[in-house]
Amino acid sequence: MGPGPAAQRSATSFFQDGDYQERIFREIEEKHPNIEHLGNWHTHHVNGLASLSQGDHATYQRIVNHDKHNTDFFYALLVVRKNHGRDPRYEVKHYFFRRNDERVYETSPAQVRIVDAPILWPISNGRSPSLSGSAHHSGNQTQPNVERAKDQEFFSDFYPNLKASFSESAEALYWKGAVALIDGSHVKVLTMENSGNGSPFYSITAGGEEPAVAEVLSGYGERQFRSARHAVLHLQADLNEAIYRHRKR
Image (cartoon, rainbow, N blue to C red; front, side, top):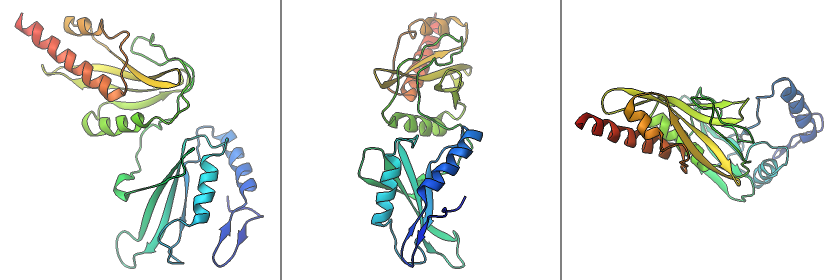
């Protein structure tokens, strides 16, 4: 969409027309409500500066703390060097800014991946989906949820069958999929994010009418966990123990 008619340029600086860009973005947002402004990228390889400038810091802090910025983080990609005749073609650095946090976080390029997966959005009021359609979600989450990112990384590495999804009708984030058990069978589980008094917690349920599964699930109706991965690990361990006990009978 371009920098805008009021953008200012010089040999050492560049200031975009923020009012123009926000107006264009809101027009795009109306047509595509799922689109989100996650961050910016720009280059310093032409001037030899190997890090973000103080002007960059001020601009990105202003954006992430703006009341119309919908996420609690802002991602900045910086091109610092052109690698002539080499792969990758450019050397880049990755930075993150957090709402109400004056620090600047730099992360390794190895930690940044483009993935084809559901977006993990903040949670608002509503009900979480469940295998039976009866699970409950309440409250309003306003603080950054670091456990969510850890859960997604853990499931990607160790439980790839558990896929993240977001229910727009229920306004809830959940992971759903098959988990392997010690007898070679699989149980379909769903762990969901809930919030109470502004603090997120996680519940879990599973499908299956086998005696061992039903026995374990009867004690999980009111259980709460501090992360989705803890919920899955606890349930899997309890199901495996129940299967083992039933086999010994």
